[in-house]
Image 1 (cartoon, rainbow, N blue to C red):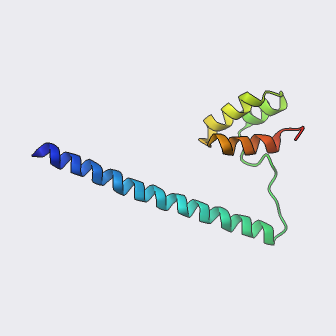
Image 2 (tube, rainbow, N blue to C red):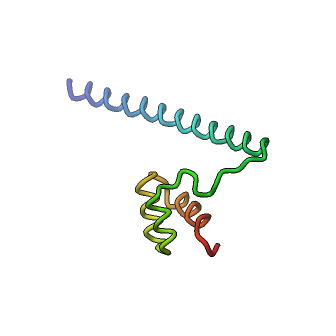
Image 3 (cartoon, rainbow, N blue to C red):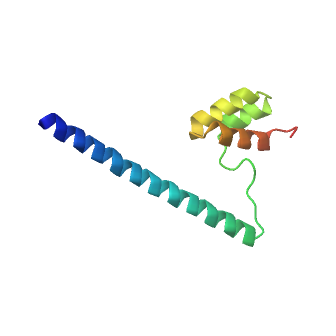
Length: 94
């Protein structure tokens, strides 16, 4: 009996955690959209290097694209696709 209660409790915690994470992702996207809107309205833009870790910028400057991808993903937790977008934007010959 106590194993079934424990299993139900764990499943409930996972479900609640998933909902919380989904809510946080939604709020994050909403904030990004608001910032983009404000930047567009004010005719301001962010430097391409804004928020990029120094080690990643060093790898880009030294011409080591794979290292830049790896470091960016390690430092930021970004997906491969997001890392590709950032590094391609920073890469000098693109």
